[in-house]
Image 1 (cartoon, rainbow, N blue to C red):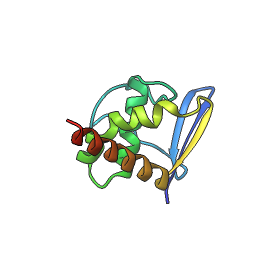
Image 2 (image 1 turned 120 degrees about the vertical axis):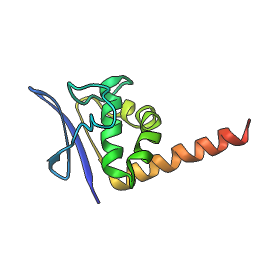
Image 3 (image 1 turned 90 degrees about the vertical axis):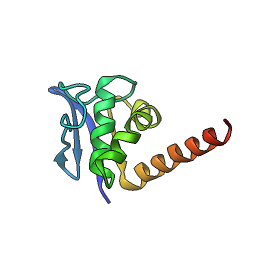
Length: 108
């Protein structure tokens, strides 16, 4: 199980996965080259959502498909000072996002 940890430092927001710095993944989308953010919806939170899912998901395409919804559902709700997410929590959030999509699709 992987653990993603975000905390605020004097140098700014810091995010690690299993003790290593999380890659911004600007190669996939460049929302915010200055770094990650959380606790609201914006470019820094979008970059964080993408980076977490690019690390977590089996494919980059899956990460690109889900990250904006993951930003709204998870990243925007993270506490400002610090947080921890694990693999199980991310899987649960992805499952919830997919269930919501199926329900919305069935109501059209």
